[in-house]
Amino acid sequence: MRVAISGSTGLLGTALSRHLRSAGHEVVRLVRGEVTASDQRRWDPDAGRISGPGLEDVDAVVNLAGASIGGGRWTRDRKTELRRSRIASTLTIVTSLDPGGRCQRLLNASAIGYYGDTGIEVVDEGTPAGRGFLAGLCADWEAAAGHSAVSTAMLRTGHVLTPSGGFLGAQRPLFATGLGGRIGSGRQFVSWISRTDYLRAVGWLLTADLTGPVNLVSPNPVTNATFTRAYGRFLNRPTLVPMPLPVVSALFTREFVDEALLSSTRCRPARLLSAGFDFRHPKLTPAFDSLRVPVSR
Image 1 (cartoon, rainbow, N blue to C red):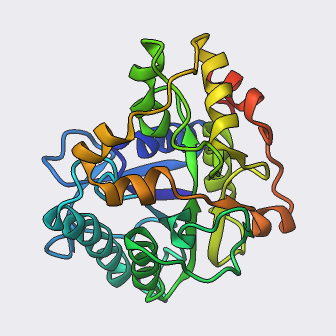
Image 2 (image 1 turned 30 degrees about the vertical axis):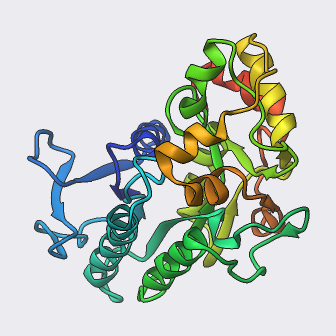
C-alpha cells in the first residue's frame, strides 16, 4: 500500500513510518515545513491545504497530527491550540478525500481520554464520552473525522510504551535520580500498549474492515502503583517517592494533573479482541522488556 502519514515527524509517526516501510509499504510523509526528501509532501492544515497531488495517489491515510498534551502549561491559549491542531488537521484530510478516489481508508488518531475518569469501571468502545476538557477534545476530534466519506477508524490510544519520549520519557528523569514513584494514591488505572503492539495494530487496521472507534490498549490495564513498580524494575531504580503533584500543578495547572495524571481509565480493547487481533505483549513486564530490543513486525 501507499500510505500518507501526518504527524510523521513525531514520536509515533516516525516509528510508524519505519514500521510500515519494513512491512513493504510505501510512505508519504505530510510535513508543515520545507520539503527536504522525496517521500515528503507539504501541507498546511491551518489553511486546509495539501500540496499536489493531495491524497489522490495514496491508498490510505494515518492522521497522527496534534500538539502534545503535555507540551506546555494548560492556559486558555494552550487548550485552544490543542483543540485547533487536532480539528484543523483532521478536517483538512477529510475534505481532501474523494469518495470515488484511490484512497479508501482513514485511520484518525484519538485517545482514551474520550472516556474521562471512570474509576474502577471497565470501559470499551461502547462507553459514552466522559466529562472534562480531554473528553470533550477527543469527542470533537472524532466528530471531525466522522465527516469522512471513506472507511474510517478512530484510534483511541492509551499510553504507548516507548524507550524515550511520551508517557515514560516524561517520568524517566525522576526515576533515573531515584525520585520516581506513584502518582497520587496510585489506585487509578493506567491503560497502556507496547510500542510493538501499537505499530502492529495500526498496520493491521489499514486493511481491516473495522470502522468507528477502536481502543488501542493492552487487554490488561494496571493501577498506577503497579505500573510504577514495573517501570522501576525495568530501570533498576527505587520507586519510593510519590510524584510531587504540587510542583507539577504549578508547572502545568491542577486541571492537567487531575485529567492527565490522576484520571483512572480501565480500558478494554474489545473490538480488536473480537476481530482476532493477536497482542504480542498483553502483559506489562514483557512489554517493558521489549523496549530493550528493536521493534519487530
